[in-house]
Length: 328
Image 1 (cartoon, rainbow, N blue to C red):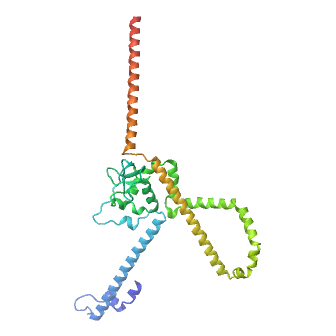
Image 2 (cartoon, rainbow, N blue to C red; image 1 turned 180 degrees about the vertical axis):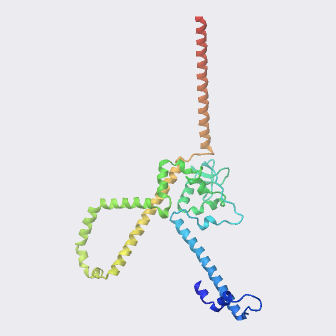
Image 3 (tube, rainbow, N blue to C red; image 1 turned 60 degrees about the horizontal axis):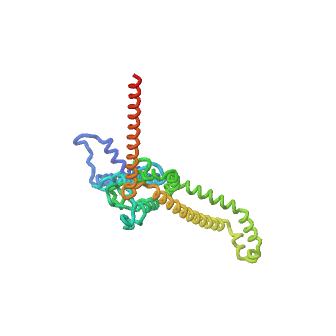
């Protein structure tokens, strides 16, 4: 900005600010000076516009980075809406059992497996297997809501304990809460990585005497010292090369650790799917009818007990009145 202003001749400022005002005494500027002024002003405006665009782009990048680190910042996908598109609806759910007599469809596998639970938005027939939905939520949640044409806020309605009354995780119990703490935010899952690191460290400490014995026997073996001329060059190598080899070894160990973490995460996801299959209540279908029948039978038994108690109270009242009459 200062550079652009410095290119403007100082005589123009003198003529603008210190020139005489009035009719015939005004100094007539030349056409070439006007052209220079207009060009410099246009360059200055273009520079300001570019700086404003760069400032907006940098603010967007900063907000995206802060949102990835868990800070409550609005992202570009949250504030951008398509023209004419409605916001996803928070909706309740229906759960049913897919059987051989009453099979259910699935949005992913077309037909749900027999004796597995399926879930769908309430009063709809767009079913999906409960285990498949939870597995997809853990691995790629961006593909969930487009299956319902982005009409329903599935993640917010069914998997958010804080802002939804229709969350299905409330039926998982304490085990589900522990698994949710371990599996939430896979990019920033410090809890799972810490526990896995502690477990691996404990296992290494347990087998440390055996490892010490193996390393000592290998270090003094003839197989190692017979090949001294082959690996001696690495012992006396310069420090940058040793640092590079250590970096490669560290990357290999990190890759192995990530593979172990992935396997443990997959096991915990399958365990969470099993808990949902066992504890998710049925709202439609044969299982829900049995639950309703049991509740009706319990109500009938309570009514019968209440009628028996009222009859016994009436009999006792009549006996008391008859005794009082005899005494009189």
